[in-house]
Image (cartoon, rainbow, N blue to C red; front, side, top):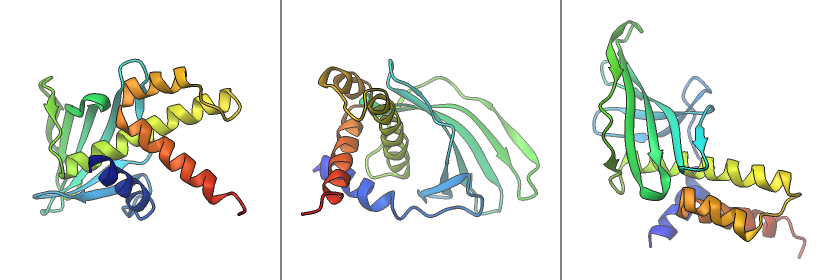
Length: 172
């Protein structure tokens, strides 16, 4: 069931993602008190650890916002906030800094979970595309196993989407 939800998110969610007024941020969802956006570029993926760093922007009801850098352990479904910076509605810096280095499980069906899905799937796709570019469009089982060990089920979802896109391009 989890795989079906992930595939539905990827197929439907990615194609209908809303853009913030600044094209550098992609809308992820609304939390309890904010709207959450992911920086559209600049994911820092480490294929060896399966960890991905990403910046988010949370728009607050008072017009302010919070910029935060997160680290995701994709295969473990865990999250670590690295730093956070709060600004008022006039973009004046209020507070922030490095966060305590504590890993947390990502809560299913939360905005944080949607964020992790987007981050980890995008990073897995970048790694698979990079290998396929080097290997002429083919990903060996050994290389895919390495990516799967790092990114878990997110790598599987990318392969399913790639197969679907390939099937869509075949003239039947």
